[in-house]
Length: 190
Image (cartoon, rainbow, N blue to C red):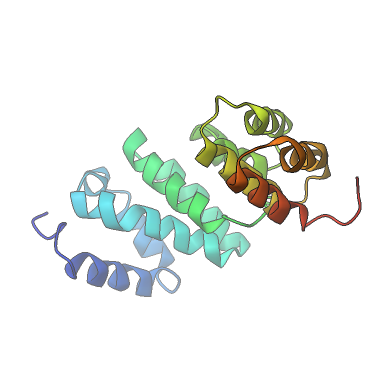
């Protein structure tokens, strides 16, 4: 635990675990069955999100099922939050369509993730909520930009009218630029 704040050792530890992540996947998962390991600062701060991100980025069915297994092994909310952070980082800019049912169920049990993750999954309620947040001046600008960017990363034509209204009506240049960038994904659909 005393090495959790070290500049180099946590990364060296991550490299050791990552080198076994594919070839010895079952051993890595078996190691994580020890719930006390999850409470170690070095595991919380440096390993959980990286491990989830590593499997999610690989993207093969076995890797995505491993993501589901990690979520099922998580002993507490803090650990689940770290795993979800890694998962969301891995899928930034990518659609979540075609996830194995086991992973979709594990994500739902874990709380479903952020609104951006739910938009990436194509959740109709999340899409509508995100579109409302984009047009709501009370939503912080940074959050609005983030949501606009998601609509530029996944194919959701129902966002066109909202994105166009931001370009036409917003006085905030960062919102206009994000909307213009997002609109590049779509070709004369509206």
